[in-house]
Amino acid sequence: MAGTVINRGNNKWELRISLGYDAQGKQIRRSKRVTATSMRAAKKALDEFYLETMAAPQEVTERQMTFGDFVELWEVRHNSRKSLTTQETYRRLLNFRILPVFQKCELDSITAVQIMRFIDGLRRNKVNVRAKDGDGRLSETAIHKHYKLINHLFNKAVDWKLLEKNPCDDIPKDERPKPNYHHYPIWEEEDLQRFLKILGALPDTKTNVKHKVIFYLGLLCGARSGEITALTWKDIDWKNRLVHITKSQKYMNSRLVEISKPKTAESVRDVYVDEYVLALLRKHKESQIQYLQEKGYENPHEYIFLAVHLRNEELVPASPSCHYMWLSKICKAQGLPHITVHSLRHMAATYALNHGAALTTVQSMLGHTNIRTTSIYLHPLESQKKETAQIMSSQFKEWRDGGDTE
Image (cartoon, rainbow, N blue to C red; front, top):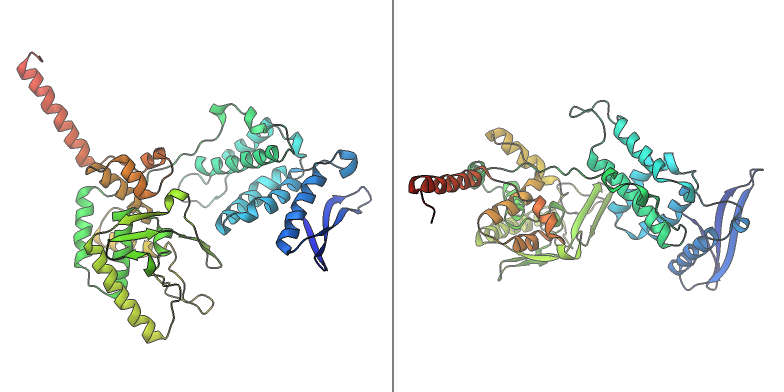
């Protein structure tokens, strides 16, 4: 936190800000009395007071703002307003690697050279000496996340008039870290057809029906796993065969779970399902009602997919990773290539496009803001490549045999 708020009663609040310690080890502190109608309003006043104090000339603040000081301010003014999982992700990046290097540096003294030296260090240093894959170093995508956060922080400092320029702007564009997104593995048509037959032959136990529904919502609609596990029965439009995707489950661990809006405004969308999926949903609902009655449990939020275990004595939605173990077990038993749950989203995009869907339709189905993001989800299928080669081969043969092309 950038400081503390003390309630003095009658809508009077005292704001206190620590500016570190002087040469004698005495704490440097600033305070201010304000009138505010709520704690939230008082905290907003604290933010403004902190920014005002830190932006004051050096003879007033007695020292320059450090990078660590700014992160405290940014935490209050910006990060605390983000989703819980975003907050936690940013804090992890800062606390593990960024702050140990830059915390005590004066904010306006950090240069592009220092930032690039930090990036080079991320590339060189091993972070997991026991890693079975790779060499234990961070991936370029992970390094890009660190750089992106640093760049974001300096942009905020410029926006808040604490810096005149972002030092990241001085890094040549071709030297800035870039993500190296890998394509998720997907099944070729032969493997997918085989799995669908295996899936159809499985007995309709409670567990199997639950995972069949999750599988088809991922494969047919391209829904994210967090979006699927956040679904409620109110989100199903039985008459029009629609699923309303309006929220997503952000799951960091069993103690940090959040149900909130999806990633972007475009992610709030309606997706169509077929009668086969609706029939599976009806079976799953019947099984769930029976389960709730037998256990004496309540499902007040009407989640479609419930966790096996209670959390704080309450029923909660299944974690986004709940489908992975079930899917992996079947794939291993049947000798099918390994895929992830997110692979279903990639397959939804790939197969939709290869069977005649427009790219903009696929973009809408996936809930992407930018069509360039959608292109990342498109994989070439071997059958399509063979078909294309055959078409070209036939054309070339016709030209060879016919001689004149006119």
